[in-house]
Image 1 (tube, helix red, strand yellow):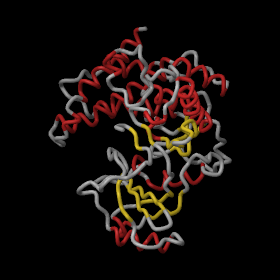
Image 2 (cartoon, rainbow, N blue to C red):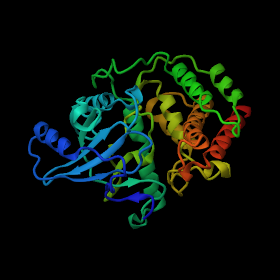
Image 3 (cartoon, rainbow, N blue to C red):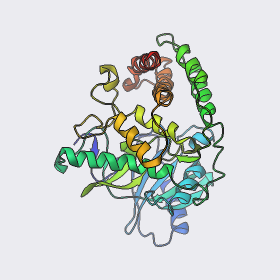
Length: 355
């Protein structure tokens, strides 16, 4: 079924993104005991960010992550950051794939990379699998567990995970606001509003530093978790830790809720939905905020800033991609409508600000 990968399989490697499989195989067999035979190689879909490959051996199933081709070393594509946070979290937050090996030897595949063990399960995108035959109560249970898994992450003690020096939690909100505003200003196009009012509002309404220091996933969506196909409410693993950080957990929650569309949202916003969040039984954003407050004791009543920031962040991400299309740096027609999507998100931010 479209939008669902029941077995979380890889696909054929995209042209131009092949690696030196022989060199990689040799390095892995030296580093990881028990690998036998020639691996069956495939690639996981996506590719706007770090590249993900599957190497299926006779007795093991591995996943290799490396930065995109042509990118310079930066925190946005740092393999050691991903490897370190997943390795630190595993003992205290088990819903993380097991990391096996990291290498900064670019002579192997042209960049740093790391290896983890593949988690067998289902990855859900826009729809729920019909074969699961989930009723409304089942869907509500699945949804509740999905959001509870984020809450559990935010409650991890960073010292217990050995991640107290993973980043600066103080000033996180300001760095995020100024950073995303700056990214937008560098990729403006004449057919999309500059939304200077939204940017100024975010700068003027930054909450006072709460002092809360949580591990933030940065991109918590339902297509970034692996579910047990036999018990869909069981989350086997949380994936894609590339923009994880330390900071205010409400920023993480706001960013995730901005992706969580619901039936009473404007049509332009519902059209951007990438998750099955509007299926009967799924929690509304208001219910999720109540759940978060109940489980954590963190007040979520005044959440406008975090939600506006979340929508604005999505707008900037889409504008960065649209800028490349607008300027002829890519001819991928999937991106042709991204300018209109950015406009819709910016207007929605303005409407939320206006109340």
